[in-house]
Length: 481
Image (cartoon, rainbow, N blue to C red; front, top):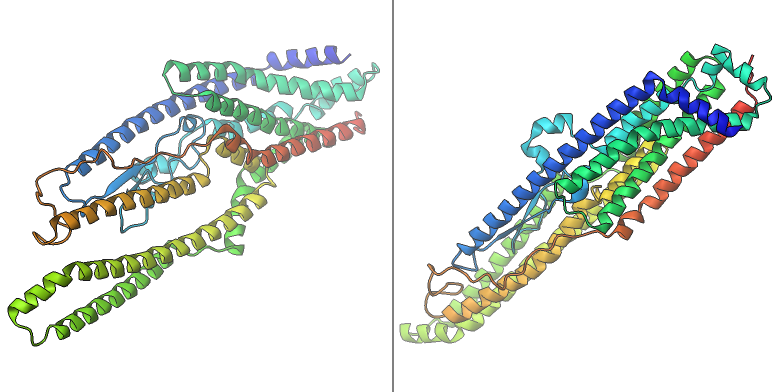
């Protein structure tokens, strides 16, 4: 009996204009989004390679280790082809020097403000918005529409089990919505291979997991549509209820959760943070200057009464010790400023993490948020991407600074007594950068990407099961008259 009901439901769906419209729209949007994602990825790779080469050429043109600075760039990820996430919102480069903490700057949207207004359409948008609406379109009249047409009463008068009937409705709607996705998704994967996007086994596993979570997401809306259809008598009422529920779940709840978290767990503004850093730096440099002036006053006092020759001999004999003393004091001052900045940045990050955690927790009352978080975690284009890169850049800055400081110390020793500390014997001679440490972009493994999604996938599963259970129980008691 179930196979007969399932076949009837499939025929009804495949022969309806809804299936044609769904197939056409899904095919167009999926192929277009992947194609645009591929082109954007290739453009970003070209820009990344060019920027890295220019940065290296600029450093190679330097003739002194005292003026050298490096700029590192965020490497494009192949997963941004499918899930853009915050990829275009966070910065693309950061300055690496001994004086400045690395911060990602120059985002895609800061240079292309038009795209910041309209945003890109990626696979997550298609599933989150378009497919969920199609799921409502498929199921809003699945039960009450049959009742209005009189076919439900006729079918149940033939001793058709209600359990099998609602299962056939659910399975038919699910297959009818899944089939329009399979063909364009397969073509999209073929496009990725044809255009030579360098995806490894872990990337393909992420894509398959993303597709699975997307199917799980619109499964909820299919079950939810059946629930509302089995709970109401008229299809017009169920469509209105589903549309209002969709607006709340997809659009309102995530934004309301963010606003609520912002009020409950406020975060220190960037302007206030930078003001605190500037005040501390100013105070420490002033203290260092006063200490240095005091030392030179003591040295001048010690040289009082000496002849010019004795003074020159005394300064030459103590120059190295004085340089080391000043360098030690300067390094200690910089260490204090760096440690203060590090603590403030860590406090700000902790505040942001607390706010994000609260916002994500509240937003998970919406399956749309749970799906969005799943997709961004799988693609590693979520809010943690900025922290991952800045942490890697800070580690690289430590290595870079240690290397440059070593080279500067070698210059001081090699040129002491000739042209002053920190000078090269030949300013026209370019630096040898063969040993300069290189920045390695952080790479997330498949296991690291999947682990944060377990909770959200569980939430989507629970939502789907509860919605179908509600639809099942409602239909068991449904009045067909």
